[in-house]
Length: 79
Image (cartoon, rainbow, N blue to C red; front, side, top):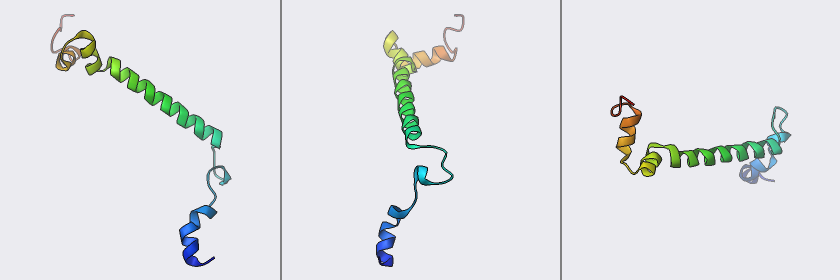
């Protein structure tokens, strides 16, 4: 193998992931981490759709700024 070919294919010969001695994770752990993060992201997106200022405004049929003012106690201070 020439030096030029090695430079093009050098990553094929490197140890990766669980093959590294300092690795603390394995393939199953990495997949679980990614799956849990995707679940968290999906849940956050669902909450943002329903409980964000925009979602609450749609639910109550008012403008987003109205919801923001209520949340900052700019209006409805007495409630």
